[in-house]
Image (cartoon, rainbow, N blue to C red; front, top):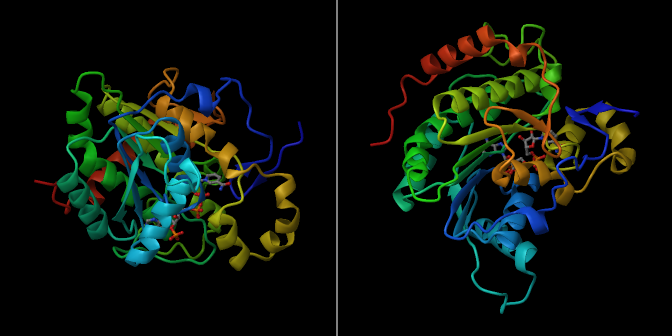
Length: 333
Ligand SMILES: NC(=O)c1ccc[n+]([C@@H]2O[C@H](COP(=O)([O-])OP(=O)(O)OC[C@H]3O[C@@H](n4cnc5c(N)ncnc54)[C@H](OP(=O)(O)O)[C@@H]3O)[C@@H](O)[C@H]2O)c1
């Protein structure tokens, strides 16, 4: 089939090899607690909507960039409206939506987010590491890491690390099914030849094409999923590529890339809706068929991995590099 790779995504419609239908296949998540990073954005928000609609967990935390109270309420209302419609008398029980501030471009903010969450909750059943950026302009995070690498990968690696004790405690509960869903991308195939350019990640990587900067952050996320699955066999960890969906990311690209501005008018011909685009997220969070540590294309199909993403030496180096980069961050009490 004709296949195009565009902003790290593919054009063939999601296959339903697993026959996954959220309406029928998502089990009840009553009593469970979920955190979704980037849930004010398209895919995170739609994931929250579908989970609230079909599985009614106790609470879903939207972990996203700080905004004023009105804007936070608007995100929660949008999710509840998407899940239950405008009817006040929607069937009980309802999922509660809470907002927690998270700026992945600041390791201090990531720690505050995890501390804030742990102060509110005694369990975390599903963690989606979903937030992400794709931009052309070279930039760095607060600690000086290349923006894609720092936000998409390093901030998430720290968040997972700080929340792991809570995930482990949750996994000991009767009937637990703890999941970590790491949102990577087919764009990992566009990473530099060596997979991750460790020599330059603590800079703005101004000389590196944005696709490579995005790509190496997504290789690192696949490495994170593999590392978490190796260390914690009591969780199921999956890396996913969602497919190609017109979201806030396309808007970032439109602002900064002439090619994207030219392609965007016809992009709807090649894209799927967010409702379809979150099926791999939902499958990875709930299906009993998930094999921990795997990378999946939509829906539930083992994905094509680059040589770097399969390179054990690179992933070992990534783990050591990450330990070093995060060594100054105190664990939560
Ligand atoms: N859309 C696709 O075709 C596609 C393809 C492959 C992979 N993906 C992956 O899917 C995931 C979700 O992306 P999306 O398509 O839903 O894009 P999106 O609509 O732009 O959502 C991304 C979310 O991440 C948030 N975010 C950005 N910077 C952040 C930071 N420093 N700290 C915390 N949150 C931050 C954004 O917040 P603001 O809106 O406030 O900036 C937004 O809510 C990403 O990891 C992306 O790489 C998407």
